[in-house]
Image 1 (spheres, rainbow, N blue to C red):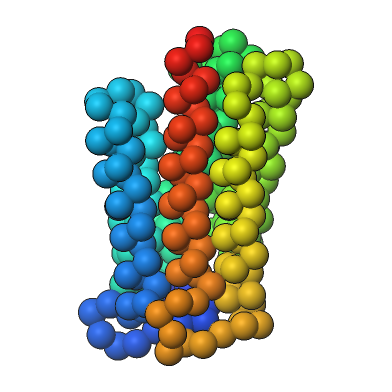
Image 2: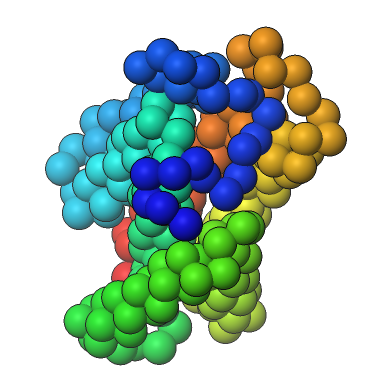
Length: 215
């Protein structure tokens, strides 16, 4: 697979020949920019707000590059943005659960992400979604264990964030599989996924802000 070749997943909106290959998808990525700026303003310079805010902006930028260029390399960059975000959640939960130093957690996460990217490159197809899913499952398990230990405040807010993400995935899946598709419509499954996952980022920021405030 050539890095500048076509991605392994086509999605509903067909790539054109203009400077922005998939404009409908690309436009919806501005939701991440919007949420990122809101978080940065609301957080007033806090470390957590910078982590969530800048990562949200980075996810939107990487996803926009993917939709604009429509290459396998930009697909990997898009996946990297999502992997970085879910690993932020794992980092925040792992610090509360294992009581390890931040450096040790980041060390293990760095190699886990590298292994994940290499796995995606080797197996191709929908391997990226599979690897991303494994990271999500690990993040969910960690947070449920914290809830069981009564170390999770306002857990309903976390459930709301996860619920919105699942809803977004339910819109994303038929778009990715071509089951429900209108390539000429601004509102499509992947665009809705972008909007809902941007909201997920905001809800999870609120949740982890509460955890930080009571440490």
